[in-house]
Length: 253
View 1: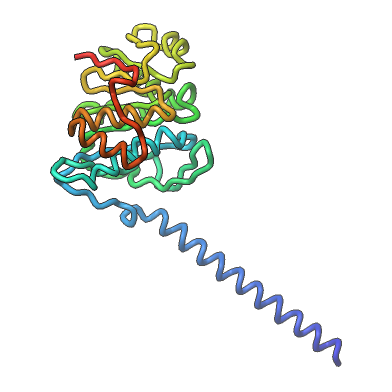
View 2: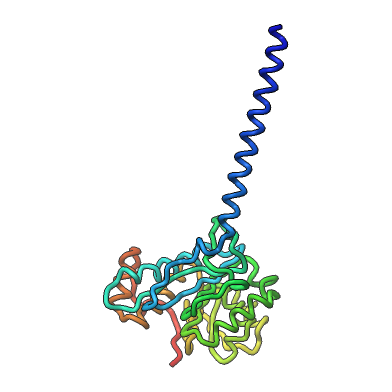
């Protein structure tokens, strides 16, 4: 009798665990469905600010994304300036995974969503910006479309390869990650390329060497828009000793 009771108890325990697992799976599915509900993740945009879109994808490098994001996000804490709304755009609403393994949930899907007007487009470097990403015609067409009305188009590190492939740098001077300069010249032989500088500003295009120097390029744009004191204040908030005259750069009037 005791043996039978143990068997019955075992069966009941198995059924209970199965139900619990099923409930967990249901909750997990509901969470995934919530992630795919794009309205939930639309950011609040202040209509009095610049709209700054960060183009992200699997393999995006952390620093080229987070450095300008930090600088631009902090503009909203400065008074008497036209600050920036910052948000991310991707070809999906599912989390993207950076090269270093950080998962980021995009705010907008540029393929399906109706996007707000983009004043400034930021193209951080990504793992495949030297190869397969340059064959992504949907992404390249998105860049071309934004380029028509944007006030500024910026890139960091190998993000310049994407801008160059999209054809938006054809009439300007640009730069990229130092060790990829030769490949950049070879891939786009008709471009004007600047060596030995950390960023280039030509017309509405700002291209930078990337890495930690992505901070400098972002601070430069803030100084261009808001003046030296605001740029120094933003730099100070991130413990950066900012002086544009000490940063090798090229500005073409």
